[in-house]
Image 1 (tube, helix red, strand yellow):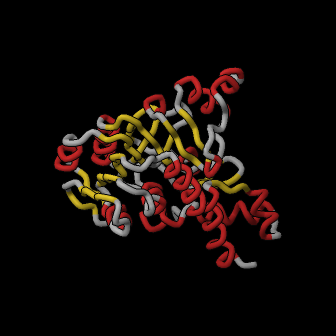
Image 2: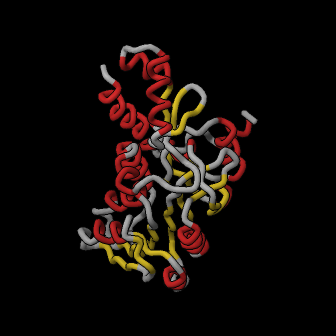
Image 3: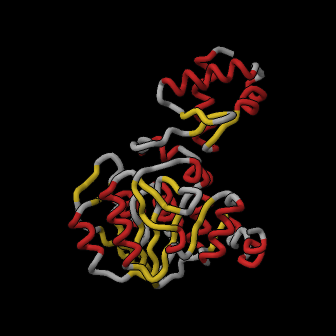
Length: 268
């Protein structure tokens, strides 16, 4: 199999899983480890992936991945997260959904919820929930970011300050091993912080790939999040920290915390 045929599939695997290993790719394609290492080096040189020990991950740093590409990354995992999150959102409440492909997935799972008031700075979320006749949708003002339909800036934060939400649901670009929730756009970070400050209950939706990336701007520590929805169990050290902080972790469609607090505390 030629390199040009392998490259797109390697990229698809990285988008789906967040990380690939040299050994797995060599077995998958039936080629040598050295061949895969050359493939990964070429893709890294082109800026398509980032090489790590034993394999590769999606690129990170100071610039986020394009929005359409982010929509394709781990789409099924995001749907599982969204189903679990929507199951914890009662009817007859006021919520905020911010910018992101994961929050858009949550919006799609709320199509049949009744008597919701949804405030959003995400034009895509507004368009999705326009299909629900039992949902009142309020779109904040702000500067339109055309690449992803997001509204940001001081006008957005001023709009958010007019509300008190039962639930605030935010996404992010990365989560550090110490539990810091991160993003790339400083203005978007300010909006996320405003949402969380006006929410009685704070929810974060983040697939496993977010734990393998970095970003420069800090939104909040996980200690300030009530519920984290993800698609794979956390590494033991971070799971133990979440238990200590009383941050409930819900994995995919399981709908239950991955590690009960007393068990995680025992692993420290």
